Image (cartoon, rainbow, N blue to C red; front, top):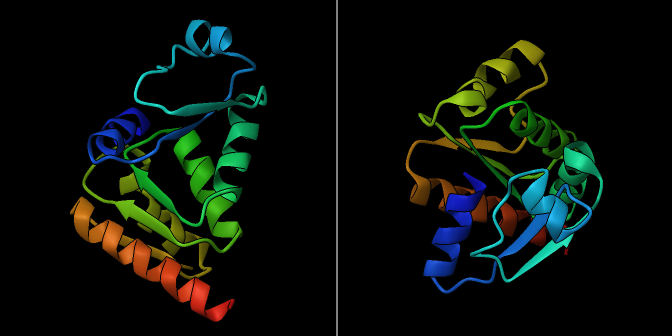
Length: 138
């Protein structure tokens, strides 16, 4: 899913920054089997996935979750604990379709989490949350 996002961003004229768990490009491609195309720059953290997830979410204004496995859940929980705006693209399978139930079971509210099955609508909702954050913190 992150690769598809990079492709979409590049096709839309965006600048794509990758945050890698690897120490170097050789490890990024060889050990992690991750792509390097469609990225303008890749930051090689050398922290593995847990450290990369922390750096990735902490350096973001918001997080968007789609499909995913355990690492996606980890990124979500970091962003949730950091009170970041989070968009969950529903009906994509994996962790994205479990998050609402997890939040209900956790009994801590929804935080700044929004849900939508339409990517465009979801991005608009997340951008609105980010704008509110900037106004509140100005």
